[in-house]
Length: 360
Ligand code: NAD
Ligand code: ZN
Image (cartoon, rainbow, N blue to C red):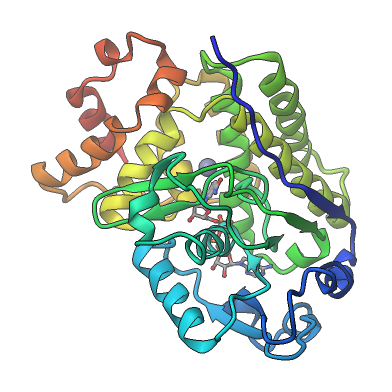
């Protein structure tokens, strides 16, 4: 038995207003005045005083606004890298991602692909990256995915939706400033927050569970329960706690795995472009046979916040489309092994998955 030797984020700041320290933090990382910092920023913040006007630009630094309407693609990473290489003679001093999981994953992937040959699709998988990435910083503006702490960057490629999982993927620096999340729309807050909740349920109920994962998973679960079920928290407390729940949820799955909801949600996302947070919610709502208590509490949270999930998104799909989703879901072997155990193939048949997708 060999245990994972897991890399972590090297430095992290937490606190309301800590975004103001970005300038100080990156100053010492500037390689020279011709090696810029590139800020990849969610375009929802264009002209927004909370974020855009506070980005500390100097010399040739550049902000690239990026839409988070769609999940990141390998081709998008390649295009960004090419654009950066063509714009500057020197390799950038660093990449700074400011946004949700979509932008954080792009920042990680771009930082990796600036030092590694070929295309991003070549690195989808486990431990395929050979050269360290350039310095990269993650600044989440919405809480739940755990992308700020994870060892992966999830990308949709021409053939698969799969992360670049590597020791060079985690951020060198993360700034956790809960104030940045204050304008997240309510539905999105719920969907991305539930990503964290589902990480906990899948980790805590998986066969890979161990004391390391459990300690983080239980903490994140308790935080989620307080945030989504109790009325006593102020808005600020709730933002602070959700940011830490996301972190702990990410730490929990780092040393275990996610499960059924994630495997099936990847199928939806690959075929229909359903985004991760809402896709997980749509799937999880139908998983009471796998996670009875987790689904019960999920439904209570959904009710409390008056969230209406889309229904019937698989209603008019053809057999070959179901097959595509099922292929994607079944390819995620470690997730099934964690969720069900070594004999998962006896339980998770194509027919079983089809009947579940048909309900969604
Ligand atoms: P997101 O980044 O897709 O953003 C969702 C929406 O919220 C977007 O419209 C965005 O513009 C908006 N938004 C973000 N911050 C805002 C703010 N402060 N105010 C107003 N609007 C704001 O959402 P997400 O759920 O954080 O990320 C989903 C992505 O994360 C998926 O691509 C998924 O694959 C990835 N993911 C990665 C990991 C990982 O470990 N790398 C884990 C889970 C999910
Ligand atoms: Zn997730």
